[in-house]
Length: 338
Image (cartoon, one colour):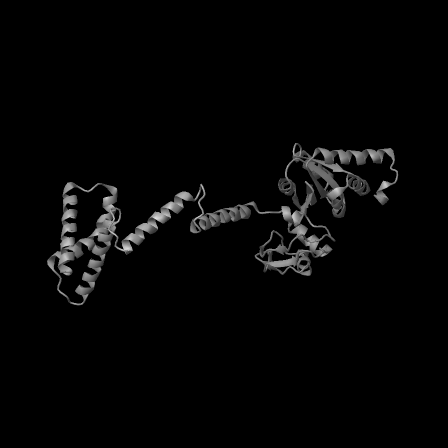
């Protein structure tokens, strides 16, 4: 323990013991950066987290003391201590903690010297400013401006600061006047500890919609793999059996195996093939038997009659007519093939 084993005053020892006690009480501990948070906002954050998480502010040296005395994997948390750090304790999982902390953030104007958290863009279009010194200020900050209709207008959309760049005083002033607030102010989670694992914020920053879609896709692919590989499971057995039955039925039709479940399909297929041949023969000038012509006409009329047939049951005369058409079609089949 080296540097951290020297004697501590009573008040410091009390704070170290309090941190250690919190680690024992809570399954998840986060390390947050509180830099730049106004006191009033911090109070609101504490209020919003009440019942969900507890924030413990302590000197960085005392936090290091506590982590080293606890020992084990938690010592690595010390490497994430920077800026104005604090510990946050919760019984929620690290992903929920990260999401909850993100909800506490608010947008604020940028100050000179701050680093842009993302590309800062000024969109083209009219502003509420009247002509005056503001035009020069915008242009000096790299924002193309002009006068139009008695108002200042941004001529084109412009990225004035790229992510990671420092915001200078001119740009900070222009952004404030344009009411562009690029800075996220709130508790920034630097790391979270649970069951011997330290989670980085980029690991916890997941898009729930994308994650759910990925799980759904994985489930669909697993289902398809199980069906295609004939791996019987409670979810896929019915589909596999149905697929096998369909394939067996198709094979019986293709091989013309006259079983009771497929005989009608085989005859129907032969009937359709007969009509196709009749059509080709007719197109070639071959004179068809009258019964074949009637069957051909019936087949052509069938699609038009299908829609109303789905809405109401056919009358007895229509059923008898269909039977006559089917009989004439079978007769045509015999006439075509001798």
